Length: 149
Image (tube, rainbow, N blue to C red; front, side, top):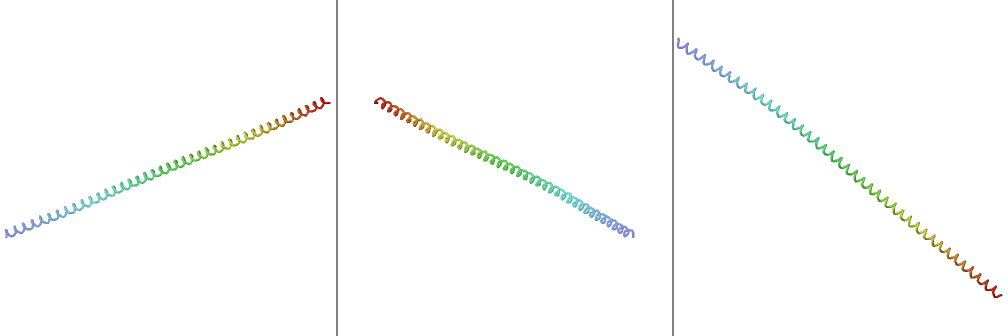
C-alpha cells in the first residue's frame, strides 16, 4: 500500500509541476505578446512622427518655393518697370530731337526772311539810285538846253 501511495503522490506532484510549467509558459507568451504589441505601437508612433516631420519639411519647402517664385515675379516686375522707364526716356529724347529740328527749321525760315528783306532793300536802293541817275540826267539835259539858248 505504501508503495502505491508513494507512487500516487509522486504522480500528483509531477502533474503540479507540469501544470506550473505550463502556466508559466503561457505567462511568458502573454508577456512576449504584450511586449511585441508595445513595440509595434512604439514603432507606429515613431513612423507617424517621422511622417509628420516629412510633411512639415515638405510644407516648408513648398513655402520656400512660393517665396522664391514671388521674388522672381517681383524682379520681373522691376525689370519691366525699368524697361518702361527706358522707353519713356527714349520717347522724351525723340521729342527733344523733334523740337530741336523744328527750332532749326524756324531759324532757317527766319534767315531766309532776313535774306529776302535784304534783297528787297537792295532792290529799293537800286531803284533809288536809278531815279537819282535819271534826275541827274534830266538836270544835265536841262542845263545843256539852257546853255544852247
